[in-house]
Length: 72
Image (cartoon, rainbow, N blue to C red):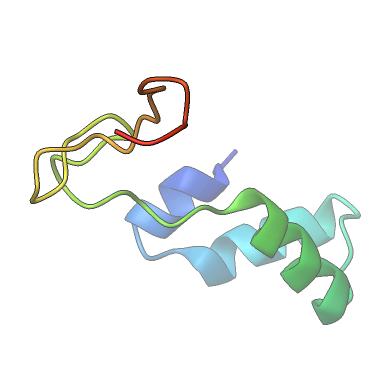
């Protein structure tokens, strides 16, 4: 049995689709697919960037409390 991952890597999507249709898997409504895909697929982070990587100014975006908030 051909998996979706294998079909994508080996450029065999048509074969995968035929295989799944023969197993009784039907088509999905395009709008439902796009809604689900949008909810599940996240854009990859820029290489070398994480949520705690520093910005150009050296900050990590982490908020800190300074003083009592009344003047400097």
